[in-house]
Image 1: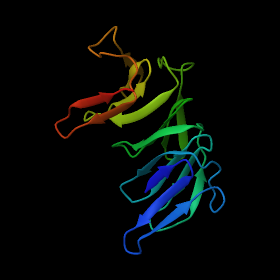
Image 2: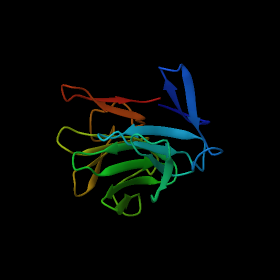
Image 3: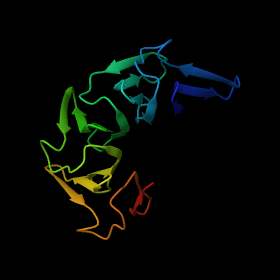
Image 4: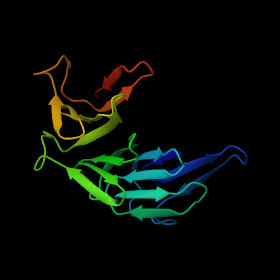
Length: 173
């Protein structure tokens, strides 16, 4: 699966052909796709830039819009508690069952609503990459690590990754 500025595309290695889904042949409202996440059941979660969140269930080619409080989705993860987390340029939200919980500068300690990436730590904390450091959710509240209170060499973080040894890798551009 490939997220593109023209929708999402899938390479079929058996036929040697591409299958593409966009706003002219699916329920996608926006063709600019920022991310695709495949959950443990094989469902594809699709985050668009301005069209919100979508789901394509395993084994199906139908894309369905998912009610989500955020619109410009930048990252999607599923945590160990099976909660779906999404980041955006409008903050962060997670879905537990059918209920969404949203976080932004107005209702949390997030210093920046533009969130580029999400990752879950081995301990179950949710980390968010922002241009003002790494925001960390401990299950109750948010805190931020930046150049003023940690050994981060820069504040602008664009991507996060934990390796198999539990080391956190942060990238910036």
